[in-house]
Image 1 (cartoon, rainbow, N blue to C red):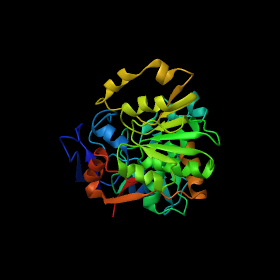
Image 2 (tube, rainbow, N blue to C red):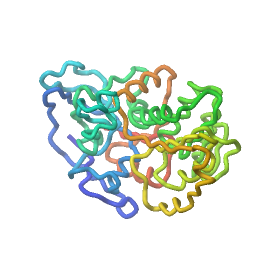
Image 3 (cartoon, helix red, strand yellow):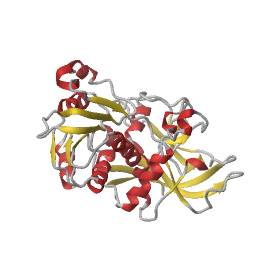
Image 4 (cartoon, helix red, strand yellow):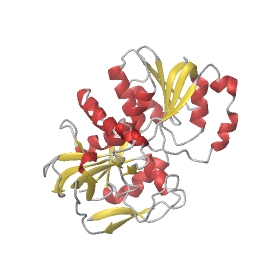
Amino acid sequence: MKAMVLEGIASLRDNREPLRMIDMPDPSPGPGEILIRLSACGVCHTELDEIEGRTPPPAFPVIPGHQAIGRVAGLGRGSSMFRKGDRVGVGWIYRACGRCGSCLDGNENLCEGFEATGRDAHGGYAQYLVVPEAFAHPIPGIFSDAEAAPLLCAGAIGYRSLRLANLKEGQNLGLTGFGASAHLVLKMVRYRYPKVKIFVFARNERERSFARELGASWAGPTEADAPERLHAVIDTTPAWKPVVEALKNLAAGGRLVINAIRKEEADKTELLRLNYPEHLWMEKEIKSVANVARGDIGEFLQLAAEIPIRPEVEEFPLAEANSALCELKDGRIRGAKVLRMD
């Protein structure tokens, strides 16, 4: 099979082609696993974190990618959940122990044995992928392969972020950063909470204009003062500045939910601006989002089909994965980027 592999840590500022296309043997499914012939894979900011070493893979080379869509092409011994030809998807959660307290509570995302697709195991920037069948998800027929791909991570992590925000009908929600995940959160909120006002903070006018197109009540720069106090803010950026700016705009008792695996170090000095009376006083709180559980993906896929949520996507051939990653790094974003395998 053909695959785009990462062979070591690299800076995308200096190396614009960190992935290399290679031919490698098709994988074979083991007991309880399935083999998937892939057709599409979303491109996520977490891949940038892997490439640049903020959440490095434990071994190289590795095939990145954790928003993978395809059809079952083979069944390992004992596998019975799917049949050949079924369309399935694989998200960030590749495996968890299934025995610890977190797993038994449905919070596999907090499991100490959590393994991530495309980091701890080969992922979706390839023609084939093997995964434990219990961690694959049936894809609702309403979505094309390209539309379904970003739902598996950008959508599922957005769903978890919204749940952790404790938003109530009639409140104000802020979204700081407006890429793949935030634009899906906006669509969810407009369906589930029609009386909620949505305020979007983004670094360029293209993203702000896109937010208005999708129904945001207001959109402005990252450092802007919101026209109204916000009951919750979801931060989907890789930077620290939006964290401080979001806290400034929270209402008393408000919650900031940070949806990021890691934050970049470039603007860490922004945290020195943190001022207790302005940013944290009046029982404001900060909540982090750690990965996703299988339940987040399954529940979100059903909700997305019900609404329906159709992500805005830009498609790239697999061989152009480096171009898609560089555009993401440079902030050239409108919706989600998706790789096509064929």
